[in-house]
Length: 201
Image (cartoon, rainbow, N blue to C red):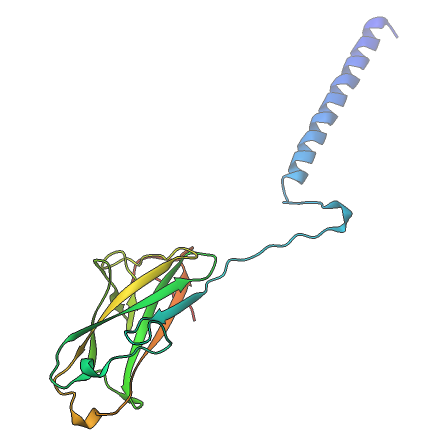
């Protein structure tokens, strides 16, 4: 075999080696890029903590500043008063993620519906009205869009009640109770549009 033939053979082996190396590189890229992997030495573990949606609600009263029941004074419940009675409801986001919030109310006297005697006429936070949707007052940015409450933040709703003129002797010494049911749902992966917001179960 002459020298030129040896050089050709060496060149062929060299190119073959380069080709194998390139194939190895491509195979390595294909394998390592196909999975998200992680290795932890020493037997330690890793924890994933999911966010939580959690709220609390507190009505403000004139006689007892904060209690579980919304209270009215006797003078506010006088027949033919027709006065507007304002109270506040503070809803606190005690969870770790932003949420939308809404509430519904029940007005009863001795367990019987009294919404025709004492009616909720308006709910506001500042100049923004809470929108009535499907029997719930939703905290809103405007008339069509829900507003979020950040984690560890509060929103205060001012509620305006009117005691109607037909509130008479029949209801003297009766107990009027205003009950709130408050909901919250995550804002992430949810629609802010009132007609599309998903409130879950």
